[in-house]
Length: 372
Image (cartoon, rainbow, N blue to C red; front, side, top):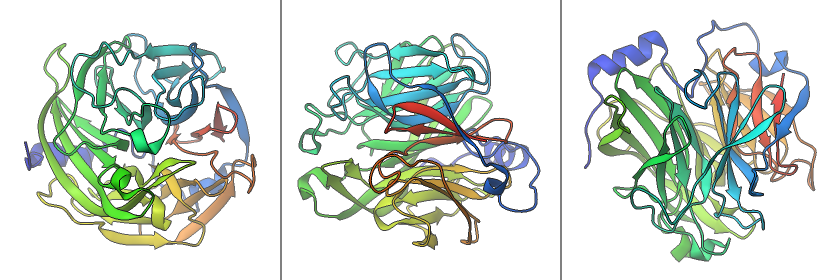
C-alpha cells in the first residue's frame, strides 16, 4: 500500500496539542540553549540483558504505566548478542531511575507471528504507542557482518513484552531509527531505512537511503494495523562499514510545524523534510539545516523542549544542539571512552518527559547514562 495522507483532524491534533510522542516534551521554551542547563553525566544502570546481549542502541523514556511498562523507566534495545556479533541482539531491557535493570522481552526469531526477513537484530528504531504497544526495528545478520544483513522488519510487542505482529515489506529495508506521533486510534511512524543497495555496494556509498511514513490504526486490544506506507524521503547516502555494520540516515524528530528532521550520518548533516505528516511524495533528502561544524557522524536525534535539535555523534563523544534555522548553539562532551574520545560510544538518546535531562546509551560500557 502506498500514499495515504494523514487526516486533517489528526494533523491538527498533533500540531495544536503537541502529541509528538518521541519529540519534544510539552514545556515552554526557555532562553538560551537547552544543553547549557545540563552539566552532569551520571550512569543510570547496565543495559546488558539476562541472556548477555550487549551494544545498546534504541532509547525510549516511558510516559505511561501500563502492563509491565512503568512511567519514568527507560526502555533500551540491544543490537549485539552475547558474543558481541552485530545484528543478532534480541532483547529489550527496562531500567528504573535507580538503576535496576530487567529484561522486558527476549524475542525468538524462530517463533514470530509474521515475516521478518533475516531474523532479529534490534536497532535504534524504538517507540511505545498508546496502549503500551512497543515498536522496535530489526536489521538482522547471520554472522554479525554486513554481507549477511537482510531487510528485517518492525516488531510490535504488547505491554507485557510478547511479540504480537511484524510489519515487513513495502519499503521497509533495514529500519534503523524511528519516531512516532499518535492521536486517538491513529499513529504515524517515521522510519529511516539503510539497506537499499548498501550490501550490494560492498562498502561503496550509494544514495538510496529512505524515510517512510507508516500509518497505523489501533482497535481495542488488537495490535496496530498498517493502513498505508508513504515514502517521504529518499536519496540519503549510505554504505556498509566493518565497524558500524552500516552507515546511513539514522535519527528522526518531528517538529511542531510538521517538519521532520533527519540525521544524515554519512555526510555529517541534519536535513529537514517539510509537511511530513501530509505529503504524498518524496522530498528527497529535504532541506539541509546544518552541516559540519560540531556535527561528526550524527546518529540519534531528539528534540529539546524549546524545539532545538539534539544529536549525538558517532565520530566523537559529543552531543550537539542545533536550532531549526541551522545554527549550532551548543556542543557538549558526554563520553570520553575510546580513541578518539567518545568515538563509537553514542547512539540512541531521549529527552526525559519532564524536559530536564537527556538519557543516552553508552555503547563502550553497555550502560544507560543521563545528562542532567
